Image (tube, rainbow, N blue to C red; front, side):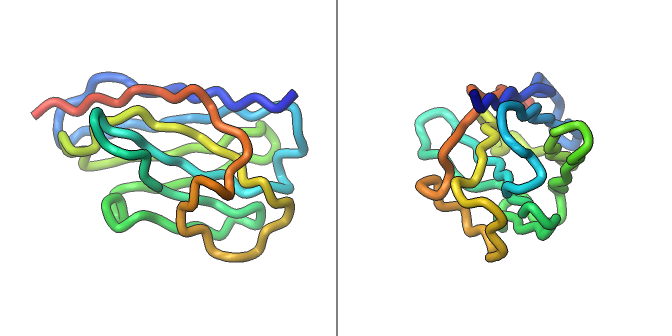
Length: 127
């Protein structure tokens, strides 16, 4: 069955960096776009970054210039490198898989387009 397992979260000081990982299994990873979302306490889940099956990327304005999404198809991993972290980046970060195979369009972060989700990894940024 499809599994997505996030890791790499933790406590970091403002200005620091983290690299989140999402290990995927149970499907042909290279055929699907992968997306990172996050949910801060008391807020709705929001789009962070996406990478298509072909490597095309898109970022939310809130992380543009500070975040980098990448994938390793040989290892079935997707990464989110976050730099210059701010307290407002504090959230649970979720990895999700697009429900469409070989989708070639741009991801705008519609969670309804995702059909599998990980359980999340908590990132806490202290000021």
